Image 1 (tube, helix red, strand yellow):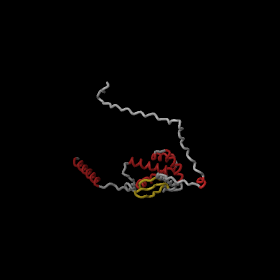
Image 2 (cartoon, rainbow, N blue to C red):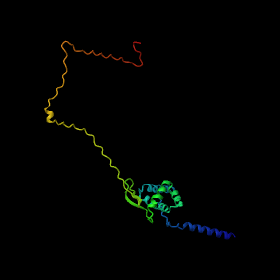
Image 3 (cartoon, rainbow, N blue to C red):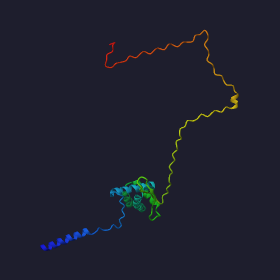
Image 4 (cartoon, one colour):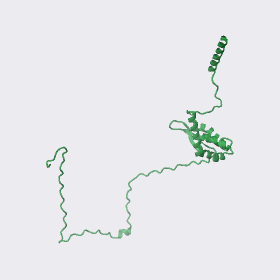
Length: 217
């Protein structure tokens, strides 16, 4: 009896050692892009990107994020083309915004009804200056996107002292005699010129010595 237990324990230990040494299974059919974030953070990030894509029809982000957003956005369009209450609830559970889900089902899904996949397009851009990350546009294929040109800023004219232009005198004005300025009338000989009152001399200010009593007190 003791020998049987010992053999059973030995076989269990050897089996556990073999399982530890065997390499884990290969990661087939697992295309999750981690983006350096936890699962909850990544799920919220992708949902926000899809909401922005539905609202603005086109967003600019890094190439890695665009590739991660693309399958989720196309899955939402597939749910929108289904149009059932169950599909609407599943889309709402992911996006968390009723107005975005309504726009997805009423606008984007109806616009892409004739397509069987491939609802989005990724346009690669150059590297970002700050960290050299590869940037890209992700947009809907059937979107009527019109690039709005930003109004050019008007350059402020430099303030310069405007030079006075010489006035041109016409020949008619030159022929007219110049009007003489009225001269100040001289006082009559009998009248005396009014004399101005003499200005009062300023009184000298008394210096005030702090901490000492004045002589007058």
